[in-house]
Image (cartoon, rainbow, N blue to C red; front, side, top):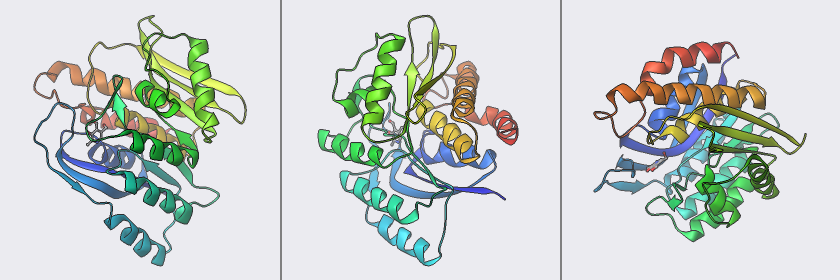
Length: 280
Ligand code: PXL
C-alpha cells in the first residue's frame, strides 16, 4: 500500500523550491503526494526581483471541504511556505479535520534565513506560525526560524550544549519533536540535530560543509525528512537520510552553479533518492 501525504506550500513557478521540489521528491520516495498550493509566485523570493504573488488563502477551505466529502485520509501532512497570516489558522483547522491517530504532521516554519525574515513576513506572522508549531508532531526550523520562534537573537556561534537547549526550548512550544537544520559547530561540518522529548534523546547527522549557499535546500531536507517519517523510518534514520541526500543534492549542484544559481540540482539525485527510500 502506498503511503499518502499532502504537502501545503507555495508554487514558485520558476526557481526550484517548495512544491516543485517537494512533489517530485516525495513521489520518487514512493509516496502518493497530494498538494495544496498556498500561493502562486512567478519565482521564489531569493535573488529574483519583480516576482508576481497570488495569495490562494480563500481556496484552501473549499479544497478541504471537498476532500472531506471524499473522506480522504492522509498518513502525513507536511507544511512549508504559507502565503498569509490568515492562512496559518486555516491550515491549523485543516490539521484538526484531517488528523487521525496515524497521521504525522510535519511543519517547516518557513520564515527566513541568514538571520533575516523573507520578504513579506512580519512579526505577526511569526506569532501565528508559533501556534501552528504547537499542533505539529515534528517541526523543522533553521537557526533563523528557531530564533524567531523563541524570540532570541540569531547566532552563528554556539556549541552542542547550546543547540540542545534551543531544541528543548523549541519543544516547550508544544511539539514533541524539533529538528534544527543548518547546524555548524565550526569544525568544518554541517548538519541537523533532532530532539525527541518523549525519550529525551538527541540525534545528530553531519556531513562536510560545502561553502556555497544554495536556495531551496531547506525544502529538500524537509521533503526527504517528511517522506522518511511517513514511511515509518525512525527519527534517527530519517535525519541521517535527509542530511545525506540533501548534501548529495548540493554537491550535484556545484558543477553548473553559475547557470543554475537559483536552486538545487536535485534532479540528478532522484535515482539515489528513490533507491534509499525504497530501502527504508
Ligand atoms: O525555500 C523556501 C521558500 C519557499 N517559497 C518561496 C520562497 C522561499 C524562500 O525564499 O521565496 C516563495
